[in-house]
Image (cartoon, rainbow, N blue to C red; front, side):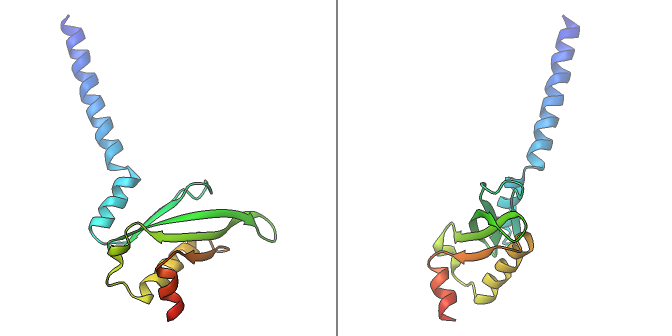
Length: 127
């Protein structure tokens, strides 16, 4: 009986360490942490064109939708739509912030055309 209790205790300790490690390397936790600290973070699965990406910059959380299409020699992401999760959090952002975000998206998807959804689309069109 004592061996069984020791085994269960060892399994419990191993399980707690495993769960702690999984929590620390979770990419969504890193995104939330960067969002709280108002830093830049880009969370994306580039191998899955059907999965949306998330991006945080200056405390604003953005989501982007990727569309697959053809280029001259391959199938690649050719269109990206980006929108903020919360429009009220856009307060204080300037044109250069959106250009920075576009540049970071272009680093990952060089053949993509980036389209912003309202109200950012109208803001960038005015300037």
